[in-house]
Length: 495
Image (cartoon, rainbow, N blue to C red):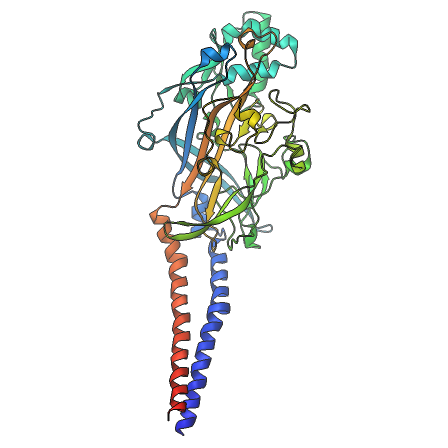
């Protein structure tokens, strides 16, 4: 009888241990996976939906200016020298409105408003009233837009003094606030002759396309870099809510009522809209996951690739960065051929395409803006050598996102981009006659967020605490079963 009891104890111990192993490696992971999948879907009234509808914490929108330190010498043909000034930090609040649900396709359609508020504490000692010397974007954009039509160049040359307040060079001495939001005047109030009428009509036409120039009540115009992003939306979105397939959570299906971009890039491949808005990702992220985001600021989708494991406030994450070929020149990476528009005149290959590390945004912003990574990170030497004062640092100037792999929650991330404009001599424009060709940096942006203590606590309560509890149960079962088995086995051996 005693032997049977010991054998029974041995069997029970093995069974309990096997149950623990079975639960730990098969049942509980499946339970957790299903639970996580349900918790992140965008159901009406769910916690995930409320966080998606209005970001619970403001994002940080940081602006860095490239202050030009030798404007007089540049006018004489010297290489530009710039000095970074920043960050000017803004709290960015986002909330979605006019939300409608399509139950048959499991999609949500909405607009998203964003508001930028200057954060004086995070910006200290810098202020919005600080003066900077930067590229005269409205003047250079006007000149560049007229380059291909000689009669327009003559008109711009004749009207420049009135339109741009008698410029002595190609630079602005302006406050940060005016350049970003309040605006730089373009004086079209008095159109006294045919040249002024034609010049202002051309600016009026441009203002209907570009977000940077706005018609004023007095019939003049103002140029500002970010006013179109403040207390405004960037168009209607339709996204998947994850109900039918959680791996499609947040996937953008259309923007501005279209599933593709209209006449931005040169073919359908580059005009495809795919990816999330970078604030939401599907769960169950692995090192081999293929992630993408759609960036309306530059009118293109961006692929992300895994870089490394990381830790944020004791939470393990996976870091993804922009694909290394995102801005590779088309002759070095054929898939980027459709991003070559040949519309932006400057330092280019013979065929008009830009060198590595640059993207022309004429088709997107209807302005001769060239996007690079900050400080010309990953850009060709042709651009780096055209300006002094830049110091690219991968850790500071690369776009990245750290994701909690179980939920896909963004632990922290930064989207970084730099706006530039080509400076070159233009026949017929006296102010440009001595310029040496350069890609002039203007500003760079760092749009990012980090989970705060409150959000980390929510993540801990909803995911990590239950996982720890299940983990404890598993090891308790395995341990208890092992004790039963060992005790029974020893009893049989030494009875």
